[in-house]
Amino acid sequence: LTFEWLSAITNAVSFGEDGATSPKRTSQSSKNFTMVVAKALPFLMKNSDDKSWEPSIRLILNFIQEAIATDFASALSLSPYSGSCGLKTKISEADMEKAYGKEAIQAALRAEPLMTFHGKWLDEVCSLKLEASKHIEPPGPFPAHFQEVALSEPPKTSVVPFCRDMGDPFTIKSGGLTFHVLARSIVQSPHKIFDVSAEVEVVMFVHHGDACLPTIFEKDPILLSEPSAALFPWICEFHWHGQLWRVEGLPVSVMGFVLNIICPMPEEIFSAQAPFLLQLQTPFRHPHKVPVAMCPPNREEAAEKRVVLAACLRIGWEIDDIPRLAGIRGVVEDWFNFHMSAGVELFVIYDQDGSFAKALPQVVKSGFIEYHSHFRQHIAHPGEETGSVSMSAHRRAAQGNAHCLASLKGRADWVAMLPGLDTFLWMPPWAAKMSDGGKNYKHRVPPFAWAKLFLEQMEDHRHRIASLQLAEVQFAQGNGSRGKSLFTTYQYRSPPRVEMSHTILVNPENVVEVGMGHFAFPRFGAITVNVSHDVFRINHYVDFVQPEGSSRCDDCTLFDDSVGLEMEEWLRMSTQ
Image (cartoon, rainbow, N blue to C red; front, side, top):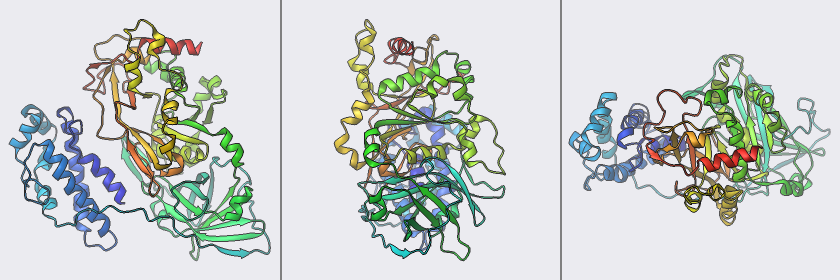
């Protein structure tokens, strides 16, 4: 809960020079503040005396105070003040006009009153007497207390086909709940949760059999896993060769999209590298039971096949319509050729209707693709209207990301969580090195596998990192003419959106959740790294499938052809 509130509030109280309070984004900033005031703060104040929530709430309120004292004071050019927030508790309209300009403030006020910048909530927060926030050291691996039991006969496993692929989803109904087991993996992380050689992670999407589906709204509703399942105490039972090991597991559902149960693995089973049965259950009178067949790959063979960089891709549109909507032939092939040239060695694709395989069978059969043709069927719900393909893809985006991350643990060093065909990895340093006036396109295209080379140079630090957070730069057509690719059509860019991570490169073994792919929840002791937009970023072609009419980017005014004609010609040559 603390992490969720901190994530929301961090975005809402960012006052950096390039952040949410820049003049053209003041209205959006106002909405963020309204969210904090109307939702977060009353909840926090109301529950601040509750012993269960009090430590988390004090941490959050302390964080808000520190943000106000530093970023807010700096953005408004306010002198330090003796109050607990470091500034005067009443922010006048004159202060706002001085910081952001009179026209920007008046425009924002017309869109939505900025009462939250200088309203009662600031007084309340700044008047709270809180202890200074303290750095919390990771607790270190927990001891795993195995209870070993001899069985008279092995358990019946007919409910789960034995030795299915570790990333092959299946469904179990138990105790009034439906458990969609999305994927399972055996994890060896330098940041252990339990004091054992390896841990088993089982990622599930859980719901009741009725028509009630919890959701959270981001553009469209996004499905949430049944919250109560994460509060159950879960027991992990390992069955192997007539023996049973029983141990307490750790349920993790910080963001709420899926339930990840982490079980310490008995050393005997880990050393054997043989199939076994893991039964997850709750210790109730009428328990929930989820039997999961585990078929670990040979570790030596897996190490040989391991790739440096893989990518998860969600197809949010009927694939046949994308070239037509974009007005560009070969736009899908360009995306794959571009990222193959960047060094992506494996793509995991999540389609909703199977249209991708029909439109591009040569890509699916290429050998560098793992293709899920109808992913929404794996977490279908009887009370849900499936709607359009794009809405269905968005609803299940977090579950697809969770499945992709789990299925790639032990198989990839890094995973790029790419949300669509309009987003491209990019490293601006290559553009600087390639500047030769466009005389020779070979000098304007980066060397092969440039992203892979960058990540290989970070190998000595990879064990410490959970994810690299990349900022977004948006591209629009502006006053330019249409070309034959995204790169020659959209050459006017925005300033970098540094106030929030747009896309992440994940080290799978050091992460337990990824949510919508904007940020990752790390294991104890692993760190997230904000990568400078000058080093590595996301180029986002925001008008990709809506080239006509007004642009989604209102500040794409900077001409940038660093990814332009030369890249287009090189990619088309690669396609041929």
